[in-house]
Image (cartoon, rainbow, N blue to C red; front, top):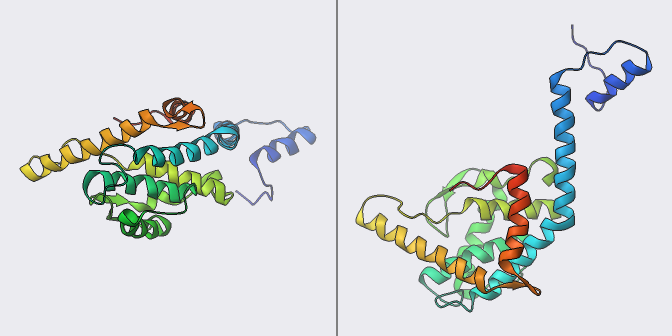
Length: 221
């Protein structure tokens, strides 16, 4: 039979057994649990000590650099405006910007409630395709405080919003793929021109991506 043990963690049971000189059988689930606790603790420390600040700094500097790219954040229509919208959405999520330019304010304001509600699939106000907004619900240690919640949602936004080379085979879809590809190139151009303080933005990006890929795996291509 199984009865409630009244302990907070599984290792408390082993400690009780050791204190009572009771023979112990170490199960694989307890080993995996201990591994997960250590993994989560190390990741949390890396994020607090480096990644959160780096991500906020990179987001803020990318917004500045994007305005200097032809067709960039100052454009009221087209490719540049969509890129600006993407960056300003993340800037708001990460809490590194407060003012949103008038030319992208509407689309940013429409996107924000979907991220905050995280109810499921909905058409992205920014890109038009369906996005699973349920993925923006913080989980695990990211529920600990507002700083972790903002970081989680910002990194999820960067990781999920993509630029498609060819969304389909129709002439309209091929043209859309070319437009999205041009948007991606503008983001890259802004990244190459940007600095975070005195440090090149690409170096900061690598400092974020390297540990993230180590802990959770590389980005899908």
